[in-house]
Image (tube, rainbow, N blue to C red; front, side, top):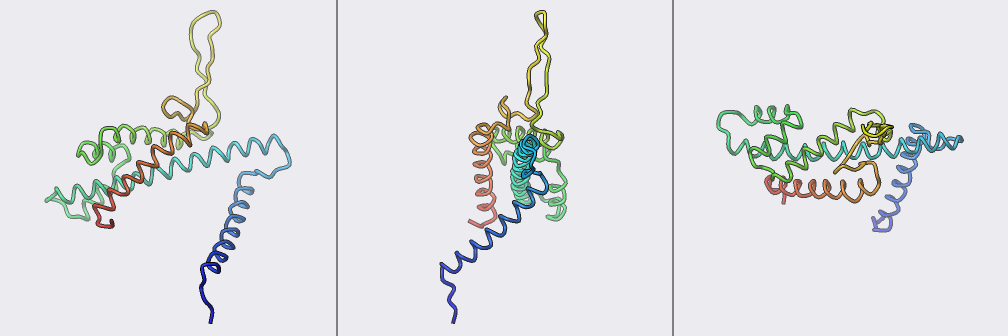
Length: 196
């Protein structure tokens, strides 16, 4: 008789994890060419891949938070509405654009003013990530004055006036801010839904 010991389960997950990691590495190498022989091209491909990881995390975080906002708004409306059915309310909330959802959550006080401001910023960042093809190629702005106008580099996506793609900005400011927000919103939604 076989026993499912913790060691055996750990070994199974270790093998599955290694297999999945190898599959992911193969996809990344194939899609982004990060194993190429040309060192300059490999470097440029790695930069692209890094920017795409950051872009996808921004989109993931924004969609996750938006989903929780929809749940909060739906909960609020079902408690305060007598005219529409739950099905009609769900469709109304689901059809809202991101900015409208944020504004309605603020108006109905399901979120704080501080969170409202942070969510508008996240929506702006998401839009910048979606509407710009190459995130790590800077834009330039000419400053007037003096004999020679100066050109300054501007990042494509900013957070608090700094380049979001900068490792420190992304990992030590953006991710903790919106990670905390996600966890807090998730807790609020789960409490309202009776899950905790």
